[in-house]
Length: 425
Ligand SMILES: Cc1ncc(COP(=O)(O)O)c(C=O)c1O
Image (tube, rainbow, N blue to C red):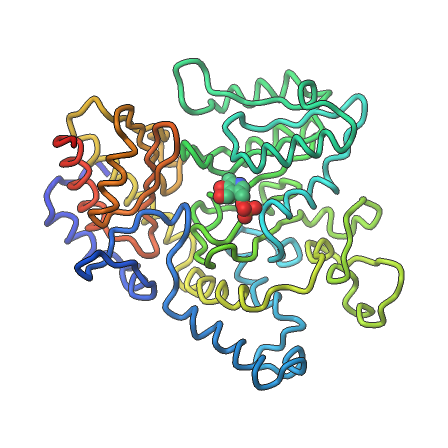
């Protein structure tokens, strides 16, 4: 990795030798005013549309037009078991057994469903460990669950924070906090990758530390699914949830994912919020009054799934399947390290990289802190066809994603970023 070079020829040569380069053509890029592709570095927020998504969606619209209700059984891909078309590829993506995953609802809904089942506080054990810098929806969900159970977030919420003067949380501090609260913790809920800093957590070690102390462990993988190589079954958290509109390119508001470890696959006695689509499919249409869940993650489904949304997601999951996470992750490490290498060549005290430097402690994203006029700079880059995103108060997030970004994208971004820093408005 230290062999990176500063010139444009290097970027072009890297693209030339990139075995994943062909996947770029399978995505639609937003255009600049003069019709060129934008440099799109925002896959951590909303992934690009696969070129095939429209055909996948059109197929379902056409079956709906042609067959209406009969499409549940007679569509080319019958709607009744349609969600299963995603099971194999989803399990492959997150390193799970098929029985452990399901695509349903949205992320925050799934998080609540998981906490209903896996956050079972008692007077002795009622605390939830989260990052202080967790995505607000997670904070709201967790606090509302604590209140729902009659506890007080002031005493039941433990927030992990970076040390003074640092931006990211140290692994040893997580483990120390778990040790210190061992007897009172009911749930550890962390992001796989923090949305603001881009820090990736050591999910395997956190799971081990939590489970050793009898604590439930769950992850929000919104920024990790399709970004990191995940081994959920092996690592052994109790549950995980993720959305599919970021790195997974499922489209805005696309149906989310949920993992429930196999050891809970037959946990019939565990409380859960139930809906008919989670009921045993063999008797679902006999409409029995009593709920009997499907084994595994499917037993947490509530409603029949949104077929059009799942259709768009299938287009992207097919591409992930062909590219494979191991190859994507290898390229991603190189691409983000190259971005870091170019950024470090810029002499300016108006920016610093917040994301950890070690590749295993981050995914594709780098969070760049820009203390002065960062928002304006970001807006100027957008006008110039460079798309990242701004998070208040001072962070510019960019993520070269290995499926559709090139080394030349990174090169172009850094060139424009450098000139915006050197020539402030
Ligand atoms: C880390 C994280 N958690 C949760 C959410 C909320 O997702 P949703 O609106 O799909 O529930 C997001 C959305 O961006 C997120 O980044």
